[in-house]
Image 1: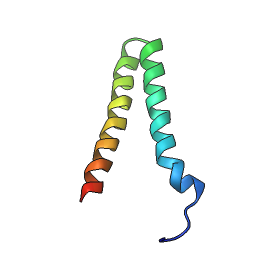
Image 2: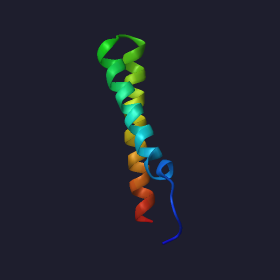
Image 3: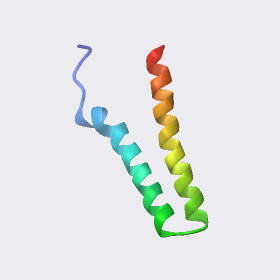
Image 4: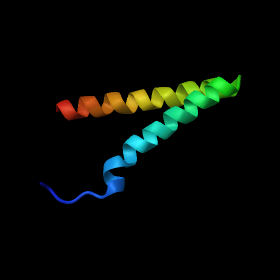
Length: 59
């Protein structure tokens, strides 16, 4: 074991991704125009982070 991790160190990134995804979903569902683009960008950002983490883990 490398050391002790804090609760924020363990759950910080997943909570941030959940917040971005939820903001993107709600914004895209409730508003039109610019919020559609912002919602799509926030959802895409979450997917890109997950893909990056998966590629990095394989190395």
